[in-house]
Image (cartoon, rainbow, N blue to C red; front, top):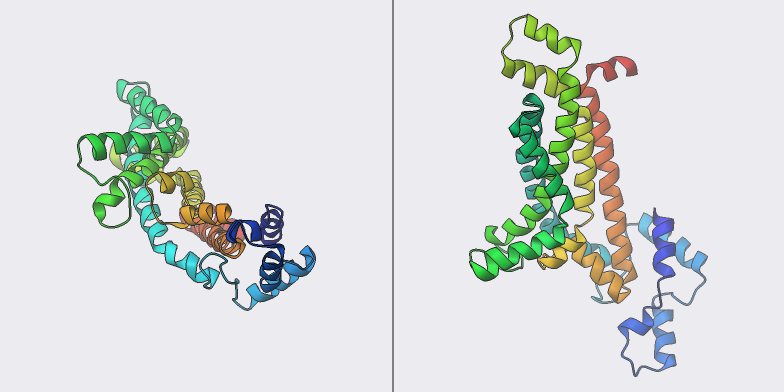
Length: 289
């Protein structure tokens, strides 16, 4: 991951032409490259970068003249706040909607849920965000247009991301629940006289959770990586907008530090999912034993 990111970033352009003024001479640009080691061969730059990262040094931001990792960490709380809110909203809406559609498969409720799922997956988040800004911020003036501050600033970006996640979860939950409800253990549970609620929640939903948990983990990693478009639309100061600014400014240290942080988050999330699988499905524990 580090090697690929470093190579792509290094081939994207010379930051000396972006960060220095247009009237800067070649001597000034050469001095800038020497200062940050950009005049060295690419292999030398990469080895030096990896050796510094191993010591916790991610370099100094070209634009902010501060440690790059500190610039990235300052944006983490905003991203975590938006991500957590969107995930909670997606779980609260998506899973109950999927379960309800599966239990009432073929009915009007099922068709309504699937229509909303199709709409939620088809509408681009940036278009939904602009639409909400026009209606709730400009016309009705219920919510602030953009920015980072109180709870009201969080409502629209969290809805834009959370509704898309809810549509994904509802569709997958419905599919997995339909398969689980057709299994022999569900018929056995009903034959024992268990209530339909217990059969649905305790037996069917629990056995349908593995793919749902996987989807949640992957989407959580993607959101932690920064919902670039949504954060840009709402001027949300998270990792996504920071990465976009770093790309435009050719601020390599900040961009690479953000990539490293997101990659580490993906690794931790995937490892946590592996551990959670064993808890959710006892068969996996027995197989490992």
